Image 1: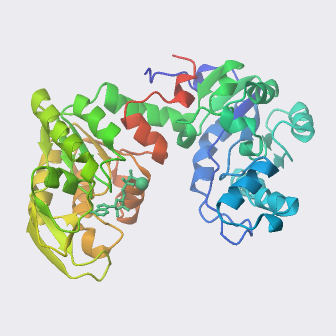
Image 2: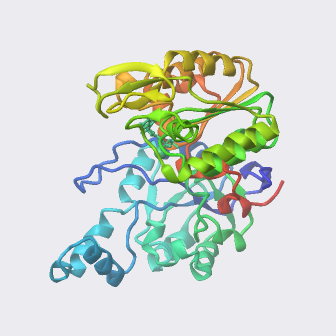
Length: 423
Ligand code: ADP
Ligand code: MG
């Protein structure tokens, strides 16, 4: 995939209407009150919006929020599948479920952050949106309703894509968290408008794309998290590219079991043992250094107050489970990143949510904070771990897209990136 894409700086936007795809899928209070509990994603969009406004563009922003069901019949079907009594499923309740996923609260917050009015459209490409987009002046911001209120959004319906595109003259994509999806607002619109990236996507492409395509070596990949099965593509792709691959987290135990180790009650995926062995063989064949844990911190239950003991890898007693890498492994892994040119990290080394099992993840985070290497963190939980442990501002780049950054590291083509103009 070509990561070298045109950005907002490469197109003329003065006096133009710009359709800007943002990721405003922010967490909201569960009570339906419309309170945004974390506005990080809205803040992250500000540089691109501000730039466009400063250039004299009119900004038509759009985003999805949550997973609304855009048709009543489909909603009834889904609720019934969940065990709800169909007799209680009224159209009014369906409309309420949609209203809770309105972007209105986002418009209010965005307006506060920008210090200027944000006009809210009542729909995505309906009469209200069309009229407000047509009347929009340079320096003004319009926010369309939740793109997933339109059935055609997730189906990448060309009619919807064209209707969105018809309101604008340029398309700017800045929703990195959604680029792995080929939806009407993330990819389809690019068929009808010149399409470029905003600053957020540009940064992701520069750092993650740069590390994958042309890394400063040695490239060390640290892979952890819960399951082997969710990281197959990442392990496989990074074994192609990296000089050293380090395995930690829950998936290490499937590797250990595949070698004949005793893993007690540790996370284990029997069906992936052959795959684990294949990866070990692939590393050997390619001359990639593959590091596996040499010791393990175990608990007698999956809980913050578990009893704890440290044992050699592959000799976890019955009734115990591996919940973190041990101190010798920490030493080994930290030494491996010390002289790295680039480090890509996806997946915590242990159950960092419990203090007793956060030491491995913390030690690796600290080691990364001290290297001169370019340090890139991908994956939702990994980003959260680095944040929670207080190392966020010491990393070169923390990806803003969970699923998108994983697919990026898997080497997959991202439809929301592929559709942008090449530089
Ligand atoms: P990311 O979202 O960064 O890709 P994952 O979703 O793959 O990361 O994994 C994160 C989760 O893995 C964390 O919630 C963590 O508690 C869990 N985890 C890490 N090590 C273990 C382990 N030894 N046993 C069980 N769960 C683990
Ligand atoms: Mg995760």
